[in-house]
Image 1 (cartoon, rainbow, N blue to C red):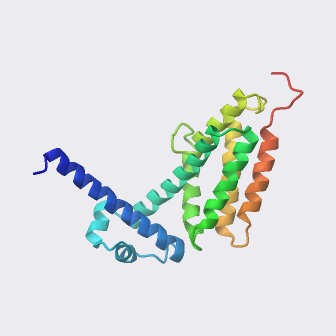
Image 2 (cartoon, helix red, strand yellow):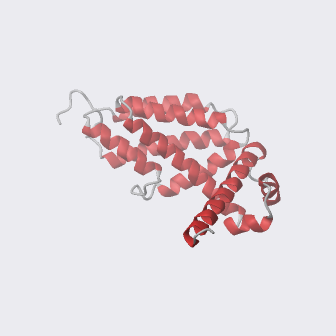
Length: 208
């Protein structure tokens, strides 16, 4: 006979599994059909779950949408954190993050742009709180501080200002791609990274 704690753990695992099943089904449908054209009924059918189960986890479709967007945003932050732990200069790390972000976007479905728009909106809202652990400002600020400490990033401007420029450029390029099917995400992110790396680089002739 299962102990009470074991039963609770089993229920919690089951709950988490169902929660993830809904998320996975929704992402697949959002990426192929688009957010607007995907109904809750479609997600339930794809996940093989009853509507009641869906609403036990997400009060509305927007709650589901927002959690997915926040997860994607956390994944971008994880790219920054991973880059910070790898050998290389600040320039190489920043370029790596921008390149890998483009690669991830290209691997998604044809309607992924709609999700990306929501990610950008959420990251814009998070920009007001650079201390938030899951925000892009927090992640990029840490990368900038690493560069300052290594003597690779300029001290002429405050690290928070440099962070704001990086996040704004990243969001701007991604939003342009999300709203324009002809926009070349990888090329523009590459150009943005190159521009930013020059802009934040420490002047070799400056006095520290």
